[in-house]
Length: 291
Ligand SMILES: [Zn+2]
Image (cartoon, rainbow, N blue to C red):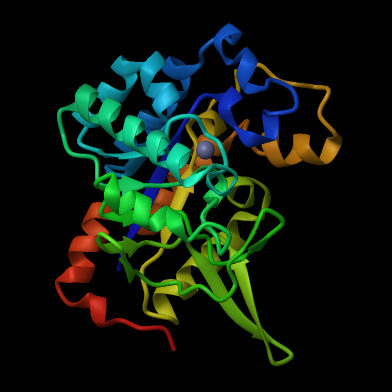
């Protein structure tokens, strides 16, 4: 079954975990790791013959247009991660619109292709900001991939579907492409395991992630969507040692050999772009519903 792999393209210092140590006012002083992290990312995709969807942050593209061009030239789908990496539900609808509009424009100028997909920083579209969907359609996006249907301190989306759904908005329909969650019952309670990427992909035992992903395809008969970041494949990035131990573990844990792990994940399942997943869904698999 075809699944989707995506990459949230940002510098190591854009990550929300680093906000207390870097802060956006210091972004301009930070040294770039774009060439190293993009090299490592392209290498693992090339090695495994995989195409993916790259949600590029506007602020990354502004600094590194050549690196974004390389991604597009390698045949990957270029999508948008917004411009300034602010949590969407903390922005006003007007500021959010400007953030997603300017990012789309810049990426289209760099790559010469239409950008139709969006992913919010830290999956920050929740019940707090449903207006975000209207704004996405207004800005010309056709799909959103910001819903991680699991529990997390920053978002709770346990009631959200794990399949592609159509969301009506003021300006027309938007497709919602959720991130991978494995579902199981424990003592009569429904549990959702976050197996889509991030720290879980680095820190949980590999067999556990693979088991969780396999059962989404094999037991639930639905495709899944996963994600990584280029900075997770860059062990040479500057480190912020003053972080609390838990944040350090969540942010840097498993980075040293993550690229070989990602390579094994990419070989273990059939992955392609979100665009391709949507095509398959439109051509009939769209009838797949959750049990
Ligand atoms: Zn991000």
